[in-house]
Image 1: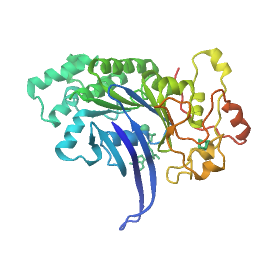
Image 2: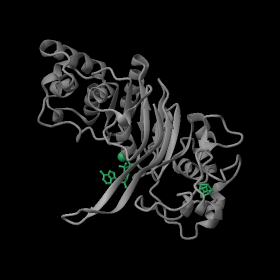
Image 3: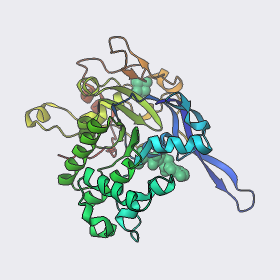
Image 4: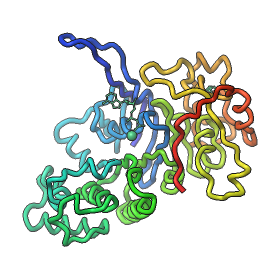
Length: 350
Ligand SMILES: Nc1ncnc2c1ncn2[C@@H]1O[C@H](COP(=O)(O)OP(=O)(O)O)[C@@H](O)[C@H]1O
Ligand code: SF4
Ligand SMILES: [Mg+2]
């Protein structure tokens, strides 16, 4: 899948009769991405940076404001009717909230069987057999076919969501924070299930999370989002070894480090200021009000997402003055951030 200059703006309207548009939320504001067959692309960023909106655009659940999303040669944003229906079989979504995404009054067998019903595939005993196969595949007891969602634990409910997503043998699954609502002890089980299914079925994943350690564990490549844009993307190894965008560096420095010796040596980069509003994103580089490296140019000149000298060909960074190897951004930012209010950086689980 290739995502080319995708924008998704939500109009804010006022007035009863004319509903005049008074502003727009720039939820996704010019995203470029590629997802390769069989890989897991991790997407990270603070809450509100547009991850879920992007996910819904990729799954064609939101029309885009502008831009192209090309899946196997077809522009998804132009699909309708039978073409859109075929796309929905190939690309499925798993949502964050296993409680909210399952109808509490319906039996699990019928929930998992929904995709068959919608697409008119397999009925009666055949449908039941296929649903029970799916339940077994995701580690649920097929005997529990007639139970209600409330009779399952959180982790089991997420398995129900996964079974439903797999029903039509999709090629790609967009996972929007699939384990964020689960206990840490259950998270690993669900993640390992997703990994096993990927190996078995050759699935492609877009895996969205705010937890950097989860993203690192599952992803081949990672894209870091800030205020509706991708600011850096690279292979998992490259990014975690040497982030180039100051925001990516700050995110990584805020994540917990498992090795206590390393944690002691590492300095946290403290960003000054709050996350700006997506209604009126800053001019130039939208990270400039919080960036420890910002210079005059950054306030007027929007940096493109490009390969910087010395980086791998698929390591892209949107920054005029990227972090250099060995540069200590922590000290630099400490000097600049006089009134640093601690931002909502993602909580890293241990
Ligand atoms: N349907 C909507 N209408 C208006 N604004 C929205 C809508 N959905 C999301 N937003 C706004 O878009 C921004 C990005 O939201 P979201 O994509 O949910 O971010 P994330 O998943 O990264 O937390 C937020 O400011 C959010 O309030
Ligand atoms: S372009 Fe300037 S403000 Fe933006 S991240 Fe790079 S150094 Fe910071
Ligand atoms: Mg979200």
